[in-house]
Image (cartoon, rainbow, N blue to C red; front, top):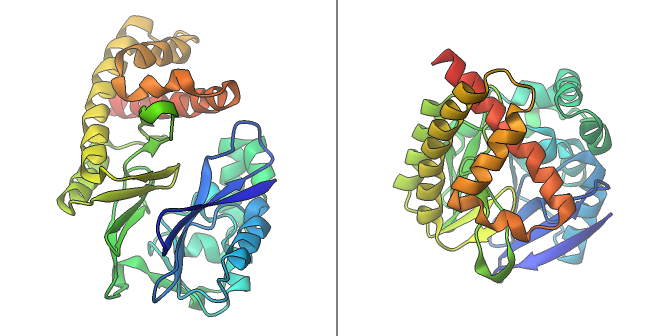
Length: 302
């Protein structure tokens, strides 16, 4: 396991956290803003919490004012116990509905293992955090940080505008850096997916007119509004493509592989898939399948 510090300015850094899982390098990351009130966004899973502390130490970060959580999925918030313990004065900002699951995280971890299997086991169990460490995002006020409630990827998802940057978590999908300035952007729509809710959240972010967008997975784009608009249009393309494919394939056990191939052929936002290494492609096929399953559940109930 290792970390990598990627500077974007004198104040903004992305700390890449590499867990012991093939294909998961340059996928998990914690954002650090090192300005007046230093904060991080999403500490990542427990297994990489030591790496994050080492990276913050290397950057001479001795204290944090805030730990911002976009959502409580294990790959984003699983290490909150260790990081909150190390930075004992930092307040933790989280959607009000997510807080009880981090105060008593046993069921959250059990659900993570049920959904992710061995990956969740590698990420590690979630340590509890005292309730008095949390501030609900719905009531958080700060002159430089604005929480935006953005359900869609998760019901308890929060994005943050801070110092001109949009920390979007997975509200705008997943965007991976690819060679030669290419594009790889995919929806992050796991079951249970409610399209209208997700689209409304994207619209709320578009209205913020962000110049830059900082993704949970992975990196920074300087065309923030345009990327959100691409992800919005992409959702409707996937809805139409998947609905037609499900009619053609029905409950065929191979339908997810067939729909994945169809999306890779028809969605220009996925063009960068061909330049990914094989381990990353394998990881992304799994996440694409999960997003297709979200659409499938939504379409069956529409």
